[in-house]
Length: 312
Image (tube, rainbow, N blue to C red):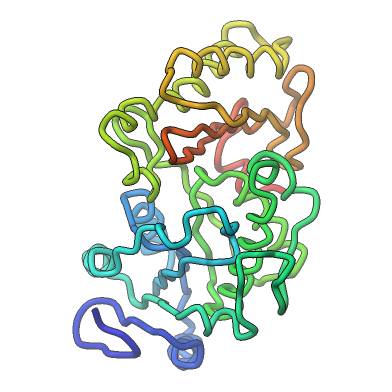
């Protein structure tokens, strides 16, 4: 593993903000468009799809690898979160990434960081109205941590475009509002979810699954798809409750999976829908536990990624 600012082969791995800013200043003088893919490492084909999209649209590509403590609760899996830096760098080398920003925690949180929100000191970012529902109803600390670290990374990396995956749909919506409200001078690009052959959305946490659990995990996507099919067959008078009921019954067919929630929400405001889906369409999302592993996923109903990604 190469650290600091070595430049022999492969991506340049940078640990400090100042070292990265020196690089970014040189790119600015050359008028280079910079694409940015923020990650927590443990990279898979979903991340690589984002990298390739960034490569196709930008002159330089930066990938951050930082397991962000602020988005974990004291009871969650921060210490167990997979860290695979050597294989991550090999993947990014193959893709021709220019810089990997790999900061220590003390660089990103100069005031220190604890997992207990009540004990935290320093500056944090909250996006009100989009952080309490869906994933926020189960993990109320989560989007505060996400918004905080992404705002820090945007200020450090200064990207022209930043690339995120649709799989984390609520996160995309939260960040889109943050970009608008805090006037970040960048374009947000949302890329469709990358799936395994059986429909399971690619995720770093999938590696936690045993063989038996892995066989059960695709039921979440099957349930979302069953709700979508029901809507197509029944037509525009179909209510949110009917769609969610169909998805719920599908999950119940898999005894190895525990349902946490389904949500059918306006794709822009994230307000829960009660009756039929309106002209905006909907984001249909859910979460299940397979053993000790949480699986999240979403699909868009009666809208598409391009429309959803470019409107707030």
